[in-house]
Image (cartoon, rainbow, N blue to C red):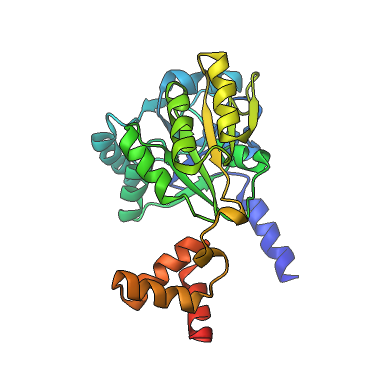
Length: 297
């Protein structure tokens, strides 16, 4: 009975938006139908919509007949605009934050405004929806039980290779955004650092008319894209964890306790640092690594 009442209260609250709040509204990443009913209602009822690009957002608003006032909020003005919007919020305004596509704050402007609103005790309400990296991940065919999303890869080759080296033995699926004009260079770095045979997935134009998933070994996908010439569209690059035979023995077979002792001896690290490294190597939480360490040492 109590659970039924809670669900009823929640549904009743959903019929209209609350008082002064910052709403983080996910918008479609391609297909305009990929927006929730709740998101449309919030966009209609707020006093103002802060947009990464007002021209892009107006296409969505026009499609759904939404006439709410818009204002620009992007990486070049967020330093000053965030403060202005928080003043409006403290004055009683209800504001929705949107980006050109997907969830605000995920490799897009938003963090500064969100953090400032929280600091000023303004309610922040997420309105979930489409996300390019999640859509690409679940359709990739790679393991989703443990993954790491790192946003855009570094543009500079040296930094990019260093990052790839750092995830070489990670037991997690790695997910990145990449610019189309850098994709071939990046795949070449994947081949060089992680090897020809590492499984990768290139998800291109997810949810759009020309949606495409290229799945296979890194060298095969690189050669396939080279043959095409120019690569276009929004790109999500996914890199599989190494296959079992590729893992270093200390990661795949040695106990947590023995591995911790090895790191402490080899790197002159303390217990805390060694546990942190082992947890990262195995893709487990630090608390889980600590429990295994206590049990086996």
